[in-house]
Image 1 (cartoon, rainbow, N blue to C red):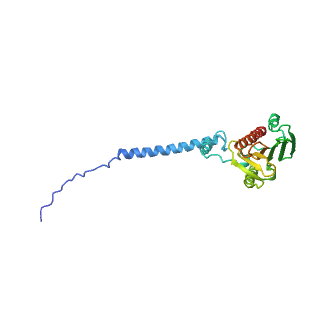
Image 2 (cartoon, rainbow, N blue to C red):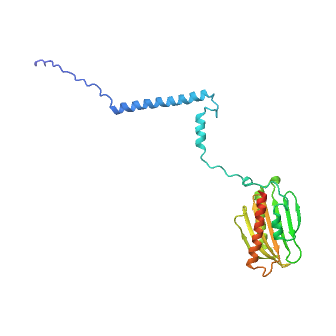
Length: 249
């Protein structure tokens, strides 16, 4: 038999678990505080709504007020064409838009004639004899009562006048062109009648749902299509048209 093995005593080494790192502890703390903050915010909103009775639009509905104010970023929608600008609701007296001194200067010893209804008014001043002249003012108003857009109707009528001026076989057109600075759109037309030897300066204007047409005619000395006559008759017609526009305001 062999010798018995001597008993040996071994000391067991104990290693405790390593503590968590500082970064991990900080992350856990941050998460806890975040959760607490969220719950606190939700509780505050609930308390505010309950205090105001839960009515949307109430004086304490702060969340709704903030949402509405932040949503006002889109530009307003344009108004329909029938509501843009001032509309003519009635026509003035047919011969009440031009001053008497203007009439006496343009048409000496003038005789006047007029007619009117709810949508059309005309006034004509004329003189007889040598150097006879006439001045005619026509004012149209397009009424929305028939269910149409009055501005669109006036625009269509004005376009038809422009087309007629370009194609009128009864006159010789010397100048026909658009004119800026009068109403919403305007044109001026200098023409010579093929009948009696007279010249006509005409200015037509659209303003909203109204169309104003002024014609000034006479028997000027010298060449009918001369530049001096053209400037004179177009300038006088434009001046009368401005007086009419002022009377419509």
